[in-house]
Amino acid sequence: MSVVQPLDTARAAPPARNTLVLVITCLALGGVVAAMASLNVALPDIARETHGSQTQLSWIIDAYSLAFASLLLPAGALGDRFGRRRALLAGLAIFGGGSGAAALTTDPDLLIAMRGVLGMGAALVMPATLSTITSTFSGAQRARAISVWAAVAGASAVVGILASGLLLELWSWPSVFLLNVVLALVALVGTLLYVPESAESDAPPIDLVGALLVVAGLAAVVYSVIEAPTRGWGDAVTLGGIGLGLAVLAGFVVWELRQRYPLLDPRLFRNRRFAAGSLSMTLMFFGFFGFIFVTMQYLQMVRGDSALVAAVSMLPLSVGMVPSSRLTPRLAARFGARGPWVVGLLAVALGMGVLARLDGGSSYWVIAAALFSNGIGMGLAMTPATTAITGALPRALQSVGSAMNDLTREVGGALGIAVLGSILSAAYRDRLDLTGQPPQIVDAARSSLAAANAIGGPVADRARAAFVDGMQFALLGSSAAALLAMAAVALLLRRPEPAPE
View: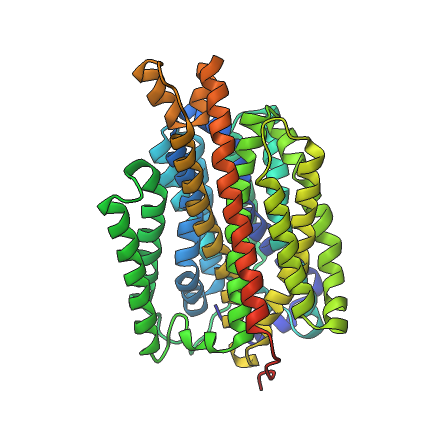
């Protein structure tokens, strides 16, 4: 995903056309980013109608993030080489078509497959939107356009949750996918009419072997972690799959070190600022998307909130994030980036720690206070982390910084849903005591909380208690991830590093 100088035709384009390009690319971006979080609101309805197990629910959410994360770098390279407009059109077509197919199925396994297809489309769309903007705008206009792009990327997850909550209040869960179809169709038509083509004539060859290695490694690790509660953490398939995935990812690093045109050069992590930013973003979004996956089920299936109420309940997160993210640049200019960054990660860890102590009768004001703390913390930490990733690199490698900023979010999100969802599932099965119940009741209740709630009575009560136990363990994992990020940032930035030439 490379940033290139604007084409002559782009410089000559009228401002009104450039504005349309910005609107269309941001609409496409908003659709694919919102899809990462929006379906979490519909999980209780999906579980009831598809009879999916807790493990299948994890896959329904994570198939999208896994495909998105593992294909992001090669998809960006394809767009640079063969045309960003072509990549955007192909990605929107795949994203919209997969969404349409997903809206028509009630089979959980087919729904998982369609979510993977959506992730493939999203991987083509996201890097193409930023590269299209950087090749269309120049100078101060480019900076403003990129700031709009970044704002849309940051806000779309919360907007997607709210939109899904409203749709579920009026219709059923397939409407969430139909919204994707509408957004993709509008963006696709707009791209055909107004978005110019741009590509790099001297783009380096695509590292296909590196792309295959990173896809295979991430897939093996995520598959093994998600399936661990079903097979057992000590099972040979679980341990072998995790070991194989880590070995393949290690092979990816060795391969990239030997390439003239690597997909991602591991040597970049020798720069402490780059390493701190990448690690911080990965761990933050590890906790964030895992927390969204767990909390949406808690609000609806334990507290009994409607989908719309559950979505609106997340607003304190934005209330804290927006002002703190705007204040962070001034704080960093006065005190340095390290202080606000570390304080932000500590606030996230504290917020997650409070959420980890919730039970079925906890006051919403406790939840709101914890979400507000998370929002403030993410606002304080995300801006210096993003700046560290891009600012640690010279101008010639800014496209690598942009790609890495996107990749850390997606990889962190995919691993967070897998690991924290797996912790939730394992603890839920382990803590659910249904002694004396018929075997068919036990099997149904152990598969998911939605199935236990459908049974009702004491079975549902015990299942909700077991789910809360699992949620507490999972959210402690989120808190630990934020503390680990805080320690890493404090250690890596303990002394200043010179800016790149």
